[in-house]
Image (cartoon, rainbow, N blue to C red; front, side, top):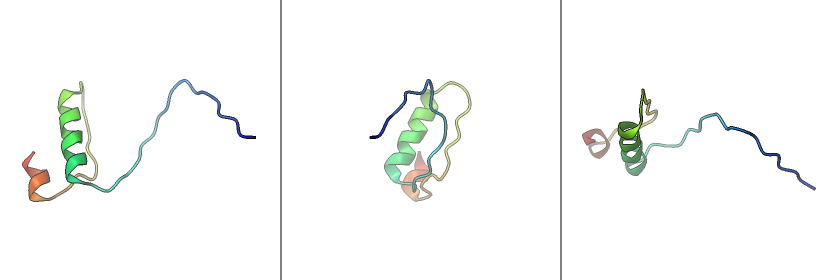
Amino acid sequence: MYSISKKSSLHGEIVVPGSKSHTIRAVLLAAMAEGKSVINNPLTSDDGLSV
């Protein structure tokens, strides 16, 4: 039998390959966020760099 216990918070990071849609979403969310945002592994194509 498996048991899952509830934690009060979750912290960490994941690394996924860059894509056009992920890069654009990250830029938009960073623009709406307060404070400093860091976007790692953005897509470095003409489309990704234009945003």
